[in-house]
Length: 304
Length: 321
Image 1 (cartoon, rainbow over the protein chains, first blue to last red):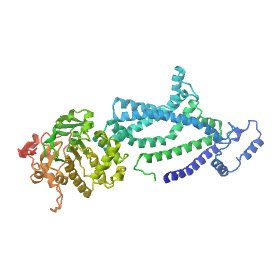
Image 2 (cartoon, rainbow over the protein chains, first blue to last red):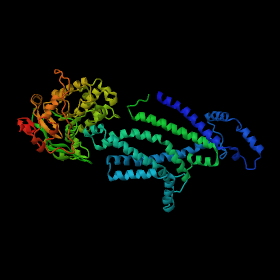
Image 3 (tube, rainbow over the protein chains, first blue to last red):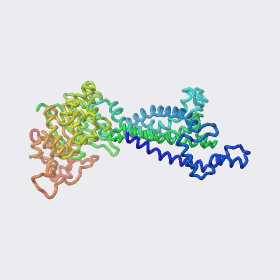
Image 4 (tube, rainbow over the protein chains, first blue to last red):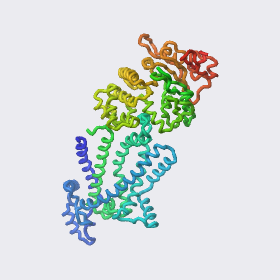
């Protein structure tokens, strides 16, 4: 428990650094006032607004008051949505989670059987097909795969919706798009760790006990392969979110990725900052989770 | 000591590598009697471990049993299906390995790993298996067996781990226990403990042992009969007394001479000159010829056969024709 508390405390400086980077980038990006006022605003009006939202203060004062507000959960108001930025982001999160979880489920369902299969039948045709497919899957850009899937299933066959969120059918294509790359990565990871583990002495011991080969592979070998698998998968959250950003844009999926891209395009900085901070927090939490799971899966490492 | 219940007849196990075919076990015949301890000695690459793995049918590609028979209780194990072979492994023939740490699965408890073969072969429930495991752990001299049952291998010492391996191997009361360098990875004091334990247990369980080792001290301590292997073949076979007193093959003599003795202080350790021949390209004559002090013309041109020079004593050498 001690360990977890210690790790949680380490999150604070990391988030501070991220907030600093985000704030600086936005600061450099330019004056938001121009976008907040109509084109025919007078210089006086602009100056008044700058003064009222504190843009005339020096950088460190602005950053200090920004951090002070953020700690209280106040990321400022989105001028596009006219409401609190954090609550806008919060509303979008479930959609992103839904997409990410669906993609991971698809990836796991593909990667575990194929990864194990190709490792146990190394250099067989199944192995060649699986590793070949993994390379292709990893190489395909999300936006291209998404568009191809839309063209085929939505436009040509007309069986699945083109975009948006709503029914289960809406989820299928984006989840496959996002899941393909992850599945490819996972398959390669499972294959390589299984190959290594199948050569271990304890696998020979397990075989010498006369237990079923299913038990040797799925219990003795796979349980060991799970250690790097789960850890690395959890560490790949940032890749997953990066993929979600693109997938959500292609499929007009109303998640945090789409929100972020739109906010960048409209220079809705409150939203951008809130999005990045929330995404950073998720990535950090997932890394922490990876560490904890790693310690649970591997009895050689204690939590304290 | 009864009749032989396990016999290898002209066993050949070859490895088909990209560089060529390695005859790791080349025409090996041996038999083990009930209650007997047969030791196979030889240096690395002599084929002793591959012989034992062949016996368990645990040879992985590119290795393959090419020909020969493994007769066990009248049946040829080479012809057994995977399923029938599984019923033999861990049940009638069990095995312990050299390195007890890497031979135990790090992510399962000791109890879990020993229970497996009991559940598999004896149709016991988990609860009954636990009872048996704790009994076995007590027999191999593990203190607080209930606690060790729930421990992971990394939490135990080397000696304890090898005791766990022995408990695992003997849990189904096998007819034959194959011990592949069981003490090599252990401290000397622990080695002695483990050997004593094994001797006690084979008496209690009436198990035959196939002991694979390069340590002649272990052979003297444990074995009834000894097979010396060189280059994938048996070069000498005899009882343990004769081996130490009247070795015939120059290789056996060399092995014995290279073992330091406490009562004979020597400045230098004696070694057999030269190295093991390349298994991809064995000479046509005797495989030991290049390193042999008594080498003759015939040795280089004609391969010697295994000859019985006295009842129970066979040698593969032109000196003993």
